[in-house]
Image 1: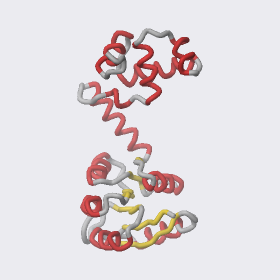
Image 2: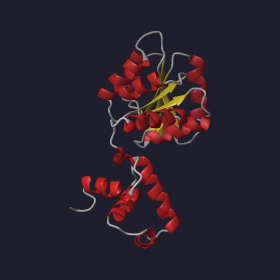
Image 3: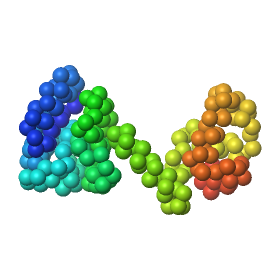
Image 4: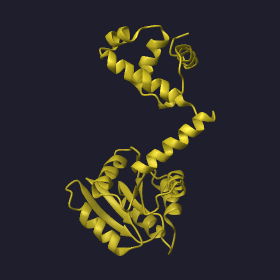
Length: 215
């Protein structure tokens, strides 16, 4: 059972969310709050698994301040920002405050549910347009030399990179990893795109720097 605390200054929003969420047998809304101070008080009392937090609450403590304080008091509780603002400022400020994810109020119910399940399991969740903007900003930093692109690689892509750097052909890599040559080619393309590299010597160089070759 995922125990939810709703925090929104509009009673009609809380009522609608409560009706939606309580229709699911594995979710229970255990409390409501209309502003940040009340949310903190209720959270300390109820110890919910997930707090759904509105950012823009004109009366009392705002959602960002409440989120930052709650993450200090209840670090194991996930906070999911529910906002009408589809812009980077609100997104980044929410994450910086300690939120585990962000969903637009205009999002379909299925997306809200997916976000709740995700953050309740300790994962992060961002609505699709936010994910796209974050990736664009990250890649912008990459082009300016301000980010380490190696962290973008999956474990399988790192395996493929290692074997490429060791001089194996696509066919040999496919045989070693028990995957198709086409899959190897796809992983190889993804590696080169993420690392912004075009040649094998460049791949060998990054593999050496990251200790993939055991040298």
